[in-house]
Image (tube, rainbow, N blue to C red; front, side, top):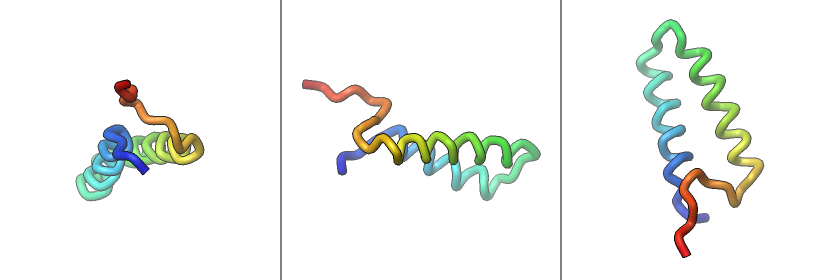
Length: 52
């Protein structure tokens, strides 16, 4: 599995929102969770285009 910058950022955001816990954290974590689930279904997808 190659490194995907988008997944890394989303994972960091989950940790930050879980600890920070603003009023809208539940909505943000739900959206991030949906994005991570979609990225997990498409294993070869990453937001950074591969350079050839």
